[in-house]
Image 1 (cartoon, rainbow, N blue to C red):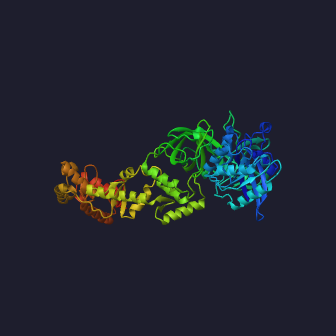
Image 2 (cartoon, rainbow, N blue to C red; image 1 turned 30 degrees about the vertical axis):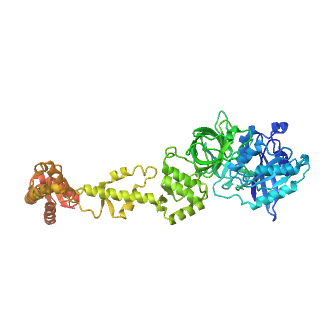
Amino acid sequence: MNFILGTAGHIDHGKSSLVQALTGTNPDRLPEEQKRGVTIELGFAHLGLTGPEGQDLQVGVVDVPGHADFVNNMVAGVGALDLALIVVAADDGWMPQSEEHLHILSYLGMTRAIIALTKIDIAEDPEFALEFVRDSLVGSPFEESPILPVSSHTGEGLDELRSAIATALTESPEPEDLGVPCLPVDRAFSVKGMGTIVTGTLSRGGLSTGDKVVLQPQGHAVHVRAIQNHSKSIEHARPGMRTAVNIPDVALDSRKERGVKRGQILTLPEAGTPSDTIDVILTRLPRPIPSQPGSERPVKNNQKIRLHYGSGRVNGRVRLLDGELLPGQSGLAQIRLDEALFVFANDRIVVRDWSGEATLAGARVLDAHGSRRHLGKEDHQIQLRALSEAETPEAFLTYLIHKHRYLPAKPAPQNFPFSNRSYKNALKDLSGKKQIARLDQGHIDAAWWEDILQRAIAAVNDYHQTNPDLPGIQLQTLRNDFAREFAQHDLFDNLLAALREKDIQNEGEYLKALSHQTDIPPELKKEAKDILKTLTTEQLNAPNKKELAPTPAAQRALAFLIRVGQVVSLDEKTVVHADSVDAASELVRSHLATHESATASDLRQLLNTSRRVAMPLLEHLDAKGLTRRDGDLRFLK
C-alpha cells in the first residue's frame, strides 16, 4: 500500500529533524539548507511502516519549508497528500506559518492530520503547550486530530507517532486509480547517460515504462523510458507513489530551449488540454493569518492574484460573480490567467495575493475551460452554482451536457475528474432520468434536442402555411436557422433523421411534411385554370411561355403548375401539359417498337407538332430514359 505523508508548520519547529528521526534520511539535500538549517526546497524521504494488521505500508514523506519566503514551495509539496503531519514546537507554540499552513491544507481539501508537538524535551510546560495547540485548532478541519508529544533529539514519542501514522493511513482509502496518470513535476534534472528525470507524486492513474505521455501545458510529447520509486527501478508506478520518471525526449528548460521544469504536469495526451480561464468556487476561512493583513481584507473583483496548482503557480485576475468576497464567505469566480495551465475539474487550488505575501483563499475547479463570453449569463451562472454544490460524476455531466449540448459516448470529456467507468455509469443514470438522449455515437441534452426538434417541425409547418404553393422549405434555410446551435457539433443530419420519424422528409433540396398537399393560392386560380385550358386544347402546339403567361400573376401560376407536375417545362421557352407528354411518350414508344428507329423529322410528323416543340420534347424523352439518340436516329432505350 502506497501513501504520501507531508509535513507542515512554522519555520524552525523541527519538521526536517522529525523526518530524519522517523526515516533516517535528512530531507534537506541542498548544501545551503544544511548550512543555514532552513528548508528551502521540498525534501523527500521514504518511511516503511507496518499497519495494525500487518499491512506493508510504503510511505513517501514530503518535507516542506516553513519560512514565509518559501510558502510557494510549501504549496507545491502538499498537493497530493494522504495525511498531513502538522509540526508545532512545544517551546514556541502556534505561530503565523502554523496558521498559514493550516489554511493551505484546508483549501487543498485535507481533512486528515496528526499534530506532532516537537521539542517536548525542552518545553517548560508540556501540558500547557498541548492545550494551546488544541485551542488553536478549534474551528478547523483538524480540531479532533491527535496531538502527540515527541522529541527528535531523545526519541521520545517517535514509536507512538509511527504507530499513529500507520493507523491513520490504513484507515484511509488507498489512492484511487482513475485510469489517467497525473504527475505534477516538483523536480527536474538530468543524469548523464539517461537524460531528463522528473519526480513527483503520482495520482489519478498508473504509469508504465513505454507509455506515451505529454507534458502540460507546453504539450511536449514524450515517452517513459524508466521509472523509479524510492530509488528502486519498477515497471509500473501506482497512484500514491513518489515517482521518478526518465523522459529522454525533452531537455531541461533553459534560456535557449523550452523544456521540462517544475510546475508542469505529466499525463496522457487524451486527458485534456490547458486553458487560461477556469471557473471555480472560491472559499475563504473566517480566521485571519497573523502578520498577514491581506488575509483579512476583502478579495475584490478583478484583483490581481497568484494561483498555486499542483507544483506550479501562475499569475492572473479573479472575476467575482457576487461582488467582493470577505473572510468566511464562498462565491463563484472566474480566474483569468496570464498563461495557460492544465488542471482537472474538481482540482483544489490555492489563491494568494499577487505580491505573494498573503494566502487569501482556496478554490475548487468547476470548469477547467471557463467561458469568458458566458460568464455574465444568468443561465450559465445557475449551472455553475448547481455544480459548486456537488462533486459527483452526474453533477459534472449535467453541467457539461448543458454547456456543450453533445458529449461523445467515449472517451470521457477532456479534463474529466472521474474514471471512464464513472463516466459511463453517469451517462446511464442521466439517460434513465431522461436528461440525456443517445444520438449516433454520443449523447445529447434531451430537453434541448426536443426543443430543437419542435422548432424545426414548426418551421416546416409555418412555411407550408405561408407558402402553400411551394413544395417545402429549403434545406439550406433550415440549416442556417440552426447554425448557431450546431456551431460546436454538426448535428443537422441527425435532425433530418429525427424529422423523418415525425413524417417530415427531404425531397431533393426541400423539406416537407408528408401530409402537406400543395395548393395554389386563391388569387392565382383563374390564371392557372386559363393556362391548363390552353395547354389542354392546343396540346403540342401550345404558345410559348411568354405568350401563355404574359402577366406576373400568370407567371406565378405557371411556375406553380410546373412545380406540382401538371405542366412540363421542356426548355426556357416551351411548356406542355403533363398529359400531352404522357400521350406523346406512348405514341413514340409504339412507333419505335414497330419501326425500330426514326428520325426527329419522322417523330415530329407523328406527333403533329412544330420543330419548336418537337426537339425539346424528344430531348426530354431521352433524359427520362425512354429513347436514346444515335446520330440522326432515335431508338427505344
